[in-house]
Image 1 (cartoon, rainbow, N blue to C red):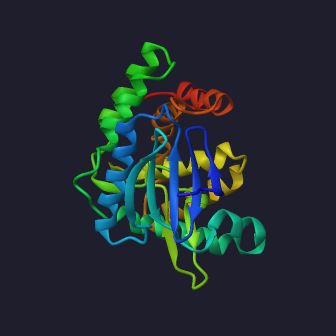
Image 2 (cartoon, rainbow, N blue to C red):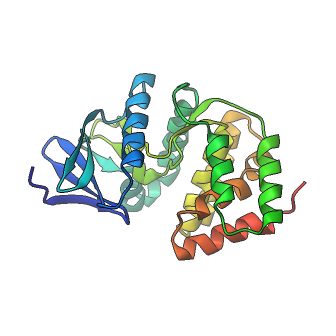
Length: 249
């Protein structure tokens, strides 16, 4: 396998296109258990009737683990938004509908969102008092079992030429409360400097689902703390400020 066509580069992996497949090649020091967990997540999500690339293979090249999936021919939604600013509202509407569709699904084999977030909170640089308050708030949130993508943003939605949408990168998928997933997407927009779009997104989701905005906002410090564990230095500072400034009930 000769990998030359780079699609994306991240701190822990490089993603290539190889003909009709996508190859996610991890760094040599990336834990094997995490690679296998990501592959398992993708295999589980394949069973819930959502458009996603099918998992084809898990392997190893020169000491580096890889996950091979189908390649979906199309354009990332974030590119379409950037190239067609006059259609932002139309794209955002479809984006929210797609996330709502994901939240209607159930997949018992996935890790529970609350369990993952409790563990992440313990790993943060926050002081023990704030950690305690975050754990307490998380414990008190309603327990759901909806499929939550965990990194739902326009760059992870591929739009084919016929308009069909596919969702990629299920590395962070869990089962839990959909509002936590919405809080994560809101933070993604905010961290990218798109505060106005973030507000429009949250308002639209809440309107379509009948969810109170204040309820989603209660998840923000929990999700921010959880995301700060692996965030880059600039993001980490902002995320920790989100977790610190909120007045806990």
